[in-house]
Image (cartoon, rainbow, N blue to C red; front, side):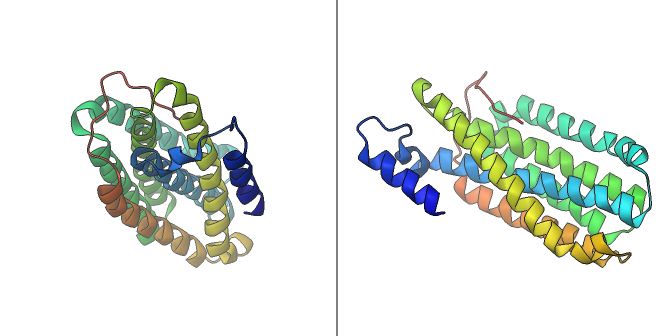
Length: 224
């Protein structure tokens, strides 16, 4: 945090700043970076918890676990593709809220019903919603900035993407620590429950903070 404060102070002081900090105060940029922060944290939670659940709790090997994650990867792609086709007509706010609610429903399934089939099905559903949230985050941020600011906005998305990854793995690993280290499944249940609640709250916040303006057809998107 100290280094970020120093960076902000330097950018305000120099004549030719590397980044105009005022861009972070714009509603579309703030909303977009919030969405990618949450979506990435949820994505990491899904993959992290799912992987450890299958290998540590179910005793599956890396190859079997990897194959079971194929539906999760496919669902993420399908969710992103569907959102990309719909965002022009539905708008980023609806896509973001729907995607996050879908993520909440999927992770709730994994939290409530134990078993490899239900967990994989749940996190696959959740991944589809997360993929849609990624599209909403990039469209929200990039479609309403000037051409010369697109690089800065894209860099902010990448930065908050990394923040979300670090935050997601730190939180869910702490919640699921007992299950990761032992044989109990309560930690995994707690982790998936936390992810579901987080996604649901983020969906409500998306309805409040994401602008209603619909991105123009062919607007640039940034996905990871």
